[in-house]
Structure formats: structure tokens, C-alpha cells
Picture 1 (cartoon, rainbow, N blue to C red):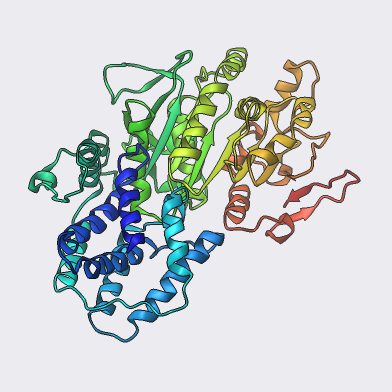
Picture 2: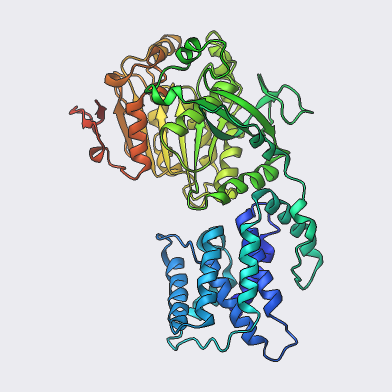
Length: 536
């Protein structure tokens, strides 16, 4: 009973936080509605009602508990075991437990993720799980089952936009009410739909796949008044804009085995279904609004809480960055949210010096964007795919990020460094920073990268980390040579264009972290320590 009360209080507070997701709000609606109907504190038999609320609360909250949640998971699983043992006898209690599980499944609430800092709740759970005596649930209140049925119907009928509206209503009213009385206004179902969701109203062409790309950028919008404006190649110094865009990817890119974007556009020149393109944009009013919308997407697929973030390289426009991010996400079969950080590249091959200066000026904005995603977005993992000059931006940002007070935990998971345009001495000097930032780092390099050869000349013979020879190897970094499968434009865009490399990244994403366990990866057999690998 204490557990139910503490869970109720935790949810009441959590729903007022900016990071609260619609899934969490849905849980709050369920638990608090049940509590309102069942728990009359003036009733001398209120403990029976509290028992029903406790059962429903734990059933809902632990339905999608992740398997690798450690000690926290052990406590919650023990709670579930004891409750399940108590309802095995059948009857209304078993029906309530099953229905609570169905609600929990529908909304995908991860109590081990969302309530990790709720100390009072965990103290109650430990106390609840400790005794070995069976739980005496007592008689079932007559209102318990109908109330849960009503809650389930309400949650299943509520779309993400309405849940977002409910969240803001609750955030503005809960702080004024010392005792919670749940009564969802009848007009909630007709609440205004958040403007950013209007991106979905335009249907993609019938042969296209739509990918939503969330982004942070320090590019200047073409219009600061129009939230649906595009983005220029000019640097908005010291500013970071948060947004989302829709990318349509024509099916020709999938069935052709990876036809180049320029070839796709040329073959269908003038046709509306040409190459991949950004169809619409929306800019949020700061990180809090961005996170609220981002949470709406993650809530729709609660089992896929891994974010894929793309950081582009030299001579890349906003639209090129967005289409590259979307195509890569599609090709590696990523199932969670896709995002990108797009810095203000000039978008021209003759503006290398400009892009180098912008990289230097973009470090804090990249850190802010990654901190927002890693600490407030409710993601379990963040994987980074970085190309070309974007690697210099990432490396220097990580050095800045970890140079002061490092995060309490590793904020990232898999780091994929494609054709890094970074001085080899600088890369090797800071190579240990990748292990502090992520759990797995893979470097892809080639001996036929014309763009990096030009960079080598520009930097007066200082070798590039992504160009071999010499080969860059370091502890905790898997270096993979791509020369035999590198058929990309100028031999530089292989991490985006090469199906063999995308397949290798898919394998890592699937958990095959050891290169020796992945298809078509073989030891190079060099005398270097550590050795490197070759994809064939």
C-alpha cells in the first residue's frame, strides 16, 4: 500500500518535469484514475482499495521491465513474483492483474529507467519484496475491474498529440492541488494538436519511404519568424536551434542496391519522385519543447529507445545532411529515433578553410545537443555515425566535454568514425577519450580516399586518421580498412554509400562487437600493435 502511494507521488512529480513522456503521462492517468475511484480516504476499509491500487500500479509499471536492469530489476521482479503467486488462485484479483499487465504493455512503461532516482519508491519496493509471507490481498473492491477497463479504453483511444496536451494540462494544475483528483476534461480529446505533428499530414509519394530526422543545428534559419523555414549555410554564432524534418526516400534507392543520389536524380530528372529530399521542417522553441515532442515518438515504440545520431562532414548542406542521415538509418534498419547535428558547412567544395573554422566554432553547440539527448531524452543508448570533417568536430568536442567534470556514466554507446579528416598526431594523442565517451569505437579508413589525400596536401603532409598508409590503431578502437569495398564518390563517402560497410555497422548494432565474429572481416595480419582489420 505504501508502494502505491509512493508510486502515485513519484508520477505526480514526474509529470511536471520537462522530460516527461506521453507514456509516463498515460501511466499517470491509469494509476491516478484507479486511485481516485478506489481509494476513498474517509472509508474505514480504504486499505482494501489501496491494495487494489497497489496491485494495478506495480502491474502497469513493471510490465516492460528490461532484462538487464541489475539490482533494481531484481527487486521489481521479486515484487512481481510475489503478486503473481498471490493471484494464482484465480478470481477477480487475477483478472485485475492480467488487465494491469495489458495496460502496461500498451504504454510500455519502464520503471527501472524512469524511476531510478525515486529513492522513497525503491525503499518501499525493497520493504515490499523482503517478507516471505504470502500477500493477503483481501476482497476485491466492486469498482476495481470496471475502473481498470475504463482506464485501458481511455489509454488505447488517446493519441500522442492528445497525451502531449494532457501532460501540459497536468503540469499547470497539479502544483496548485495539494490532493490529486483525477478528472480528465471532456474537451481533452479535442485539444489542439501540437503544430510539429502537422508534418505527418502530407502523404509521401507511393514509392517513397518517410523518415523523420530530429536535429540540432547552428545554421541560421532562412526566417526566424517562420517555424517551418529551411536553413541556410550561414553560422548562427553561439546559437543552437532544435527541430525536426521529414525526409522522403524513393524506393529506387532500395531496389537498385544503392544507386547514387545523383544517378537517381539524373535518371528521373524532372520527376517528382527523384532523389531523396526533405519535404518539411519544424523548429522548436528551445530544448524543452523539442524533448516533449521527441518523447512522443519514443513513447510510440518504447522497446526501441536507441537513438542514432549522424554528424556530417565537409561541403554538406542541411538537406544533404538530412537525406544522408535518413538513408543511413533506413539502410542499417534502425528502429529507434534518428537525429543529426548539422553544423554550418558552406556546402561547397571550394570552402574548406571556412568549414574548418566553423568546426572550431561549433563545439559547444554539439556538446549541448548530445547532453540534451543523453541526459533528458529518455533514451537507453545513443549511437553516433560521424563522417569526414565531422570527426574533428566530435573529437575536439569530446575533449572539451570531458576536460572539466566528466559525466557520471558513459553517455554514448557505439561510435562509428568514417574517413576521419583529423591530424593523425591529434587523433592518437586523444584516442583514449573515445573509451570514456562510448562503449565501442570503430574507425573506417581507406587507401583510396581522394578527398583525404587533398586534405593531406592542404595540411602540408600531416597524415589524416582516415587515410592509410600509415594505419592508425589505438587501444579500444577497432580500425577497419575499407579499401577493397570503397567505390564511393572520390573514395570518401563510403560510410554512407557502401552496402558492405553499412552491413558491418548493422552487425555491430545487433551486438556483434568483436570484428572476428562479423562476416567479411578479416585480420590484416600486420606487425602493428594492436592489429587492424580489413573488410573484403
